[in-house]
Amino acid sequence: MAASADPRDKAAEFAENTGFDIGYGVDQAQADALGAYWQSQRHFIQPAEFLLNPENKISMVSYSDGPLARMTPDDVFRMVSFLEDQKKS
Image (cartoon, rainbow, N blue to C red):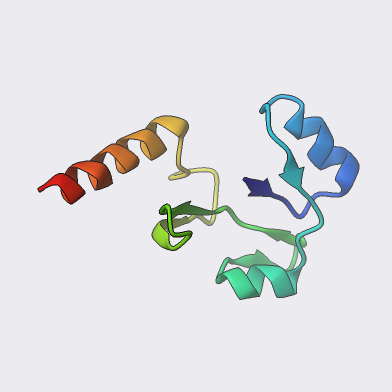
């Protein structure tokens, strides 16, 4: 699941390349509720990535304030594998 501060048309355009829907129009109040960083000068939310467990509780969170250190699909796979291995131990 993904969401963006972008307007609907721009989010839909990006979603075409991902294979899943992307929410749009995230505002500062929603960013604040997530604990994510809202960049006031440029009116957008910095990346905030959450990995949820089967009970929909946050297992991991990653916040970024720039183009570096964002999770990749491989990062998510490795984290899920690690958490699954921890449960077995």
